[in-house]
Amino acid sequence: MELELKNLYDDFRDAETIKAYQKIIIEDAKKLTKPINIMEVCGGHTHTIMKYGIPQLLPENINFIHGPGCPVCIMPKERIDHAYVLSMQEDVILVTLGDMIKVPGSNGSLQDARSKGADVRFVYSPMECLKIANENQDKKIIFFAIGFETTTPMTAALLNAVVKKDIKNIYFHINHVTVPEAMSLLISDENSKIDAFLGPSHVSVISGSKIYEEFPRDYNKPVVVSGFEPVDVMQSISMIVKQFIENRCELEIEYNRLVNHEGNIKAQSLNDMYFEKRDYFRWRGLGDITKSALKLKYEYKSYDAEVIYKDILPSDHIDDHKLCICGDILKGLANPPECSIFGTACKPSSPVGSCMVSSEGACAAYYKYGNLL
Image (cartoon, rainbow, N blue to C red):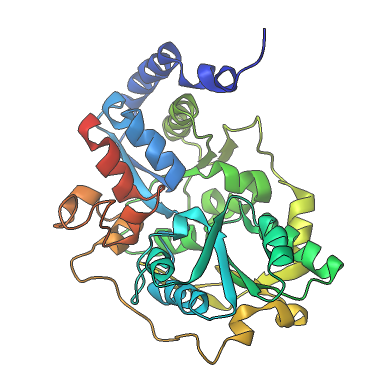
């Protein structure tokens, strides 16, 4: 029999398996001494939770808090403005990943820039920049790099190819951010309600589960690295509940078919070759977070668009619309329906906040799947 894609995920969406985990969780939850709030850090988990109606399968003493795990959602407006300004330069082709197209900055989105004549291109792989550069040798190709640890190696691989081939017309605007620092900030907030984390899966494939060791050790918060399918999420919740009733606080891996403790050493080495930590990075809705993002090392400054175009890039911090509560949603302090403009002034066709723009944003998930609640 020919193997089809759905054969690879059918078992992880099996209704009977989900119901079996539901029964286990309900029985175990009766032994909890207090309600537990689980933050799913990754937006991919948020969409699975909403799409499959997982909150409706759980007892009332288990709750979800939606975290900041969407790289587009946490991108501050001034960085979006950088992309916009760069795209409007006559000799520039701006290249980025697709989620960036509709994110509004203070001057508009990259979609707006395209409508005004800017050459903005969206790719699935950064390596497509090589073909674009070869076909447009009179242009400067700027790759506006976004994402967590998951996509950083792809940017590093492109830079590695550019350096080795001595390509002169590809430049980089680096916006890669790292997950653990944001998790630490959220736990440290005096209003934090977080009792445990569902750890991001794809991030962990690259970085390994080792990046979460501090949370059970230093903060007494268990972490279970979970896959994205509904069976993965249900099993991970069950693992968290068992830790509480057994008085344990540990780092565990549910997604062990792809994640291990050390991660992808080759990818990490490639990242370390070209990138170093910024002193701080401003996360939309969360503010400045120390050592939470990457930049090009000094020896690669000739490829750094932030250095080359520093005189024209805006530097002022820009706040969100006063009615938008994306900041509180990203902190896990509010849910999308609590926003006064959710589903009215702010919806996917006319997003006000970043959580509605991105396909991984919490607001987009609630808008798309809210009828399942």
